[in-house]
Image 1 (cartoon, one colour):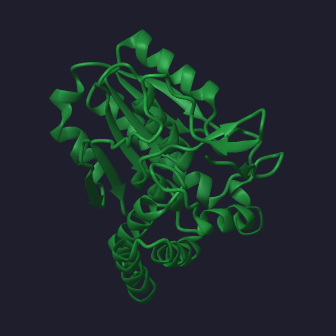
Image 2 (image 1 turned 90 degrees about the horizontal axis):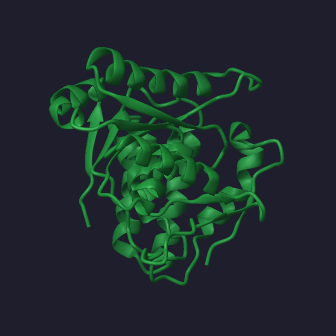
Length: 276
């Protein structure tokens, strides 16, 4: 299992691309990004996400001359159709690097591509929302089953283990590129995840997360904030990968999201969570 490398700070995305330009230029790059449709109301949230996605596209294609192919996800969660479309694009172009940028949906789609691809693909995640930071720290992607209207683990090939962890090579967090709204909610959700971890018997990670979240509430430091969400994402239990205990905060968050975070909802409402 590869080890994630976390790169965070102001304007770190361009520096990373510049320092890894020669390696990235060896093959096309599949860029998985969030897309906000024209009928959606513009907001500070969507504008920030769009800004980070556009910045990545500019740096890769225009500034460093890297060949890219685009795969966009506009839904709240990626679907199996999104996965197959992106895998086909990677196969057709010979892409050996996939960069997920923007929302949590882009993070989950990128992880699903890494897990399902028959080739050794390097994964890079560039989260730009609170939920995306958490998603970038988890190894398992969540996919929307459009028929069941439920969140599931993707249907992988027979030779792929459902519990096999996926660890992208690098997670890049621009601390000046995270959407500002709902940050307090995200930190308090991290507290709940820490309490749940202790309840499940994961006292070490739970206690560490509670300490980080408490400091993030008091100090309002950007790096501490992103570290808290990364810790929350890696601590969150989906009730899979050897554990039969499902996460109480995950279920609670699903019920609260349509009320507190209206920008997360879709036309038919938030799907229920259905996990093995």
